[in-house]
Length: 105
Image 1 (cartoon, rainbow, N blue to C red):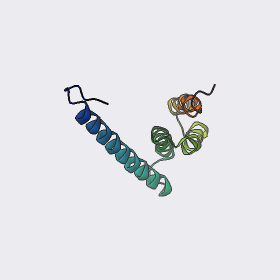
Image 2 (tube, rainbow, N blue to C red; image 1 turned 120 degrees about the vertical axis):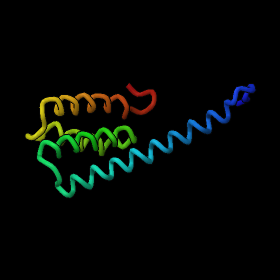
Image 3 (cartoon, rainbow, N blue to C red; image 1 turned 90 degrees about the vertical axis):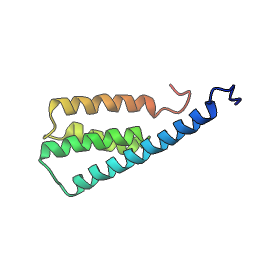
C-alpha cells in the first residue's frame, strides 16, 4: 500500500505491535487465572468468577473451544451469581457468531 505521506506504514507497524502486546498480556492473564483455578484459591464464588474470566480471555484470544468449556462451567456452577451466569450465557451467544466460518450462516 502506498504511504501517501501520512505515516501509514509506521502506523500499521505500531498497530501490529500493539496487537501482539495485547495478545501477550491476554495469555499472561489467562495463565494466572488458570493457575489460581488449579490451586483452588479463593472462595467457590471467586473461582466461578475466575472461570468466567478465563473463558472471556480465551474468547478474546480466539480459543473458542476453551472459552466454551470455561463459560459453560461458570454458567452451571452453583456458586456463580446470577450476574456471572447471565454474563457467561451472553458470551456463549457471542461465540456462536464469532466461531462461524467466514461467510457462514
